[in-house]
Length: 197
Image 1: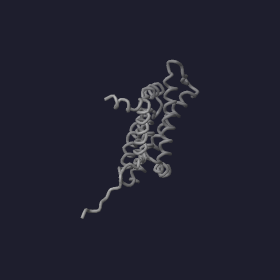
Image 2 (image 1 turned 30 degrees about the vertical axis):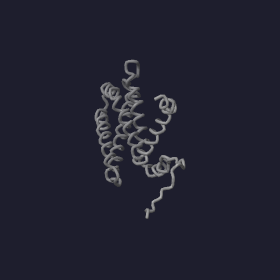
Image 3 (image 1 turned 90 degrees about the horizontal axis):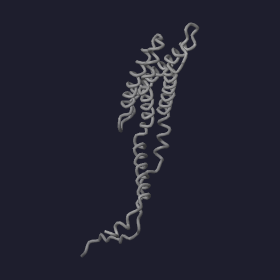
Image 4 (image 1 turned 180 degrees about the horizontal axis):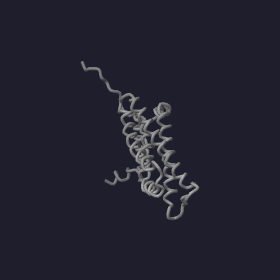
């Protein structure tokens, strides 16, 4: 029992080995499905928008610009549908479904247009000649809505770029060495497979 405990590696070495193996498994999964990279970016964009929907809703209620509610609804709807299209565009171990991919790009275009329209409505409300809205402590949610909608557009553009460049960087990712080296200590004797007479 004492010999087993003495042979046991220190905690730091075991932790480093565990992290190294977890990183290797992560790279293997990315090599098999590199499309997970743009999908994660698009999911992050959806979460950024949906988790700050309260600021967007409050801003819509305060400004009440034409089509602001519709643009917010379109952003949520087409964001979710674009994620569904993305997953259907890259089926596991099959070729890319080009029509689904094109539909996904079209939906993301609608989302970006709706976000840009929403930002323009905010800008018009803040700069209009008659009764402009001023951002104070009570209306700080308008500035937050502006910030997160702009962030949403930026993340979506990044996701689109990663999707377009997928064939390029997927080849580079596949070149990463993830195989486990097996050390041969040379202690194994030669096996005689000749039959005895």
